[in-house]
Length: 410
Image 1 (cartoon, helix red, strand yellow):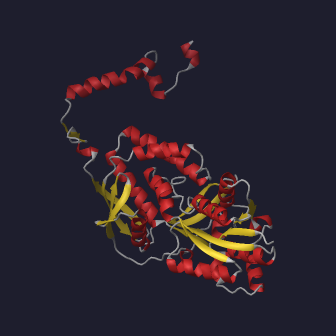
Image 2 (cartoon, helix red, strand yellow; image 1 turned 90 degrees about the vertical axis):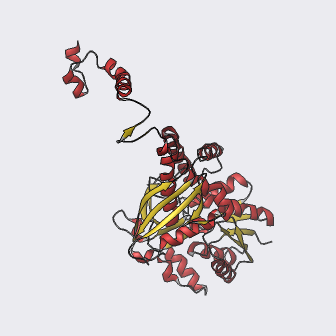
Image 3 (tube, helix red, strand yellow; image 1 turned 60 degrees about the horizontal axis):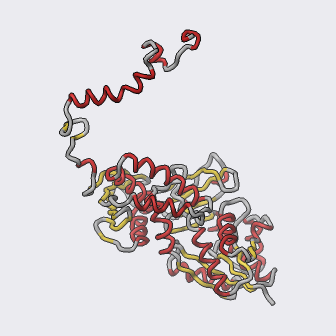
């Protein structure tokens, strides 16, 4: 009997090769599954299904996991202002776990003997897929032709052409992974340390000139409005911000970071929606949260992003961090204004009923209402006590230098 295999299928070069190879060379019954986390339109999903059938798939399904991805991942990445190495909003990499979970659920539903993916042996995605499959279905076989045979893109293209599959292979010069939270772009330039991607590599060309004002509304940390229009669906609000920001070619950058497999990696990305939302949210938090809430959120957000990026979504501590992040969002409600310009943007300001600048205690640098000059003098004297105690045996000169000569002390 033929082995029943569920292939995680995006329609790109690697998964296209895998679909044909497993069907022709390994005589497998290939079921392709596109786990759509919000990166594909209905028309794109139909085109991918047609492509899968031409490549030899017995059946193709589109698994809609957009809401699950938003509710269980994007919300918390916004709450935590997650930017990997201060730059990358973990755009496509955060989707892989949810795609893998959807694939393994489908494999169990149809009684598959194996699951397959097209990840190479040099990237993070192989770990994200493998680890999720291993944890949720340890009994199932995992097949990875591209990784196991160490194939080049040129070989895969040649194989597909030789076997009669025609496609626009010139468009595959760059590896483009589009998602709800941004698009990653890989190419020959990202393999080096000194080159950057050309304009043509990015999916969204510059369309606007001058500047435009954008407003984003948040309710308890979640995006709920764009330019005064209310949204009850988070992904739709994100798409609206992305559509506006991408016309200005905002959100382009190169990320350099440490991979799960221990080497440095470099990838280009564009994520207008993610970057505008995260920075708007962060500004609103500066006005509505306390000093220590902001401090601990920064620590937890960095750890949450690292664990998510490194395939540890199923680690129970992630649920603990999510509980903390959600609890900090009770007062993060208000509107943020942003000015958009070609390739850039500027945060303008916020409006919120929870704005802590409106405390009535005073106006920074201008006026005090809740204390007197004598209060500050006494407060400063008390504040100085620990330092005065530390430096009590030192001369003014040595206090300034910040060190004591050991020989002199003796």
